[in-house]
Length: 388
Image (cartoon, rainbow, N blue to C red; front, side):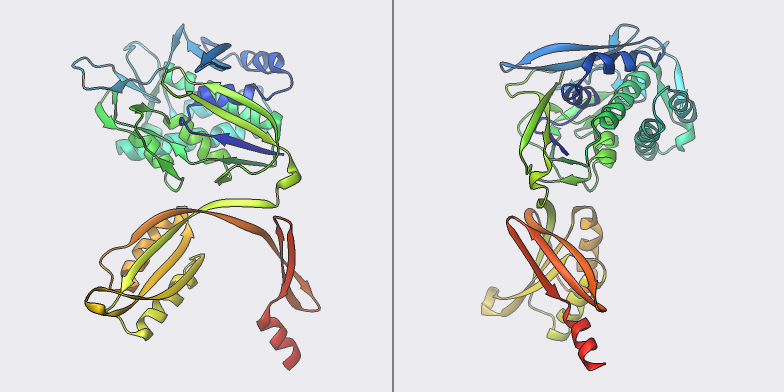
């Protein structure tokens, strides 16, 4: 079974939790399990929510009656002290350090795998905050309302994933919104600095919606649980709607799809395509650069003869790489070529599932999917075998 997340309106912890909650066979038992965790002063209540005429679940998580909200900045003079993890306007709120949060997680009465997942998500969240604020993670303090709200979302999502037990979790690119958000330290651009760090290597996009759509907690959960970002492929069995707290002209929800395994061999993914035009390098230099890029981990490198200004014959270098390797590959292109600019594009691919088997000492590549299955002997192995 594949779990696919549609993130057309970003992701927050409560939205992800609400979407997964709707997929569970025994929702009441799940909520009771969360309440039995006895997080201090935390109340968890699924609420029916209707947005754009669609019914879904808003998972309301409150600490002493307060629910965390982001404060988008629209240029007004007033301010709201807020940050998703480590600040809140309640000056008297208790603060926790990173190790105290991990201790809270370690004492929760949930399966060990759930504790491990929750701790890993919080570690990535803490590391992002540490990097943004320039302080060791052990010195980052988290105010109570933000901490316990995020902790309930993180543990809840981890427990829901444990109960659903998908073979794979996939997701679309993440819509992050646009504009600014106001936090305790001032106004920062969207995505907020911590969220931006957590989304590194993940396909994202902005748009005409003003507001913060992907929170740091949402970004940390996606980074930990999603194994592949790309288009949805498969037969839909169930759909869950996790509603956000804000209202927009568009449906503000995370949609979670349960897909059966009938089409798991029809794979798609997203990769980065880098291109540059070269008219002042020799054939030997271009060949060396292409070879080095492949050796250093590019998915594919190919050369196309083109014509540039002043009717000069030239070569277009095209490089495919993983999204998470984009920055490193760009640096290598600049180091290995004479180009002054690199074009960057994200492309979706339909790919065949591949495996290598060894028969009589010769490797055979098997590819299947989309109604196709074929085999090909590795030429080098075959040549070695017949010449030995």
